[in-house]
Image (cartoon, rainbow, N blue to C red; front, side):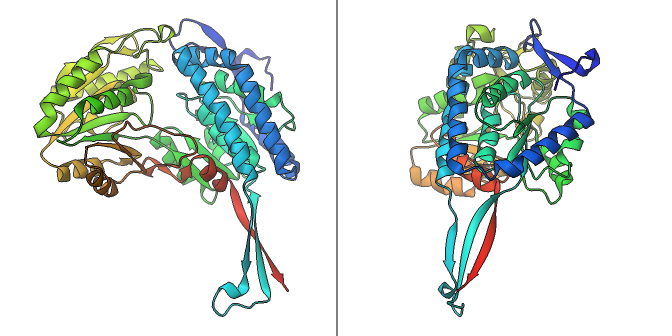
Length: 464
């Protein structure tokens, strides 16, 4: 939808604020209402299109993303501050995700149930169970993976016969727009996917409570996700929210392996990932050695410009950098020790390692979404599990030990959706289930799980 009134558009700049990348429409509630109405109307025909045609359209979309990978990756790089190599990987990973979704969708099928399979059930009854689309899916994506996390919602919705209303994060919206242009350049019926841009403060509540929205799938902050959950009432919701993922380092761990995985898990994309390692719980016996090894590895990280493929680059905005700095300062005031880092240049926070962190410090519990790693020393495994589970979050955890049996035993006690054994916390592969416990989410994602969440069973009982 085009706007000619200057007040109805907003310029989008690079993450450093130095380059204007384009603009987005600031859509009104009336604009949103028309878009949702059109999606609802088109969906009635889209759901009748056969699965093979829907799958073919998704493959076209994936092909278009590959063809336009440099253009889209360049926008991702500048808009959210990723190195070009990481941005290209995101686009290609997204194409693979879409193709897998198309093929997984083709394997979706109904079920048959005989009445006499249940004791006392009448043998003359046969149940035919089919999956129906929910209708119009509202997909709300975050800034940090503006293409991949958007497509992980849109592709499953489309293969199951749903229409989509897509609301990208404001910083990331131009990348999302290019992704949708690649989708629109297929045989997808016009209007099946509606791109919504604008101020969340003005249209957000209107979107999630609209009577023609039949499902909401959201990735973003826990605070916003909880608000959506309260507003949607009877509408199905899948939420992918924040995390405070711990790395549990046992005294028998391979410390070199642990350091390599922890540093990568904590500081890739400057820590701006819900699955980033955000605290280390280490047994006293190896704490000093681990901290020194972490210091050496962190000091080898490059700091600077995302265009130079630096390991640490500017955070998404000044508010984000202010928050990380605030957490560091509060911890230092309460007795934590800055082993390395604790330096800021504009929105670049140098990778910071904090030792001697305790339960009284905010950085032990709050999600920084930036390059700071607190180390909490513990006496034993029981204390590790207790501290890990005291968090309001429950996304993932890493356990580093040479004793696999012990790792599985400890992992079973952790209140998280996923446990990584001797590896960093991370999302994927994209067909693996992705689950958040407690305040980290609601529902399950991953390609097959996402497909299942966007359909409902419909039962036909044949009386023979």
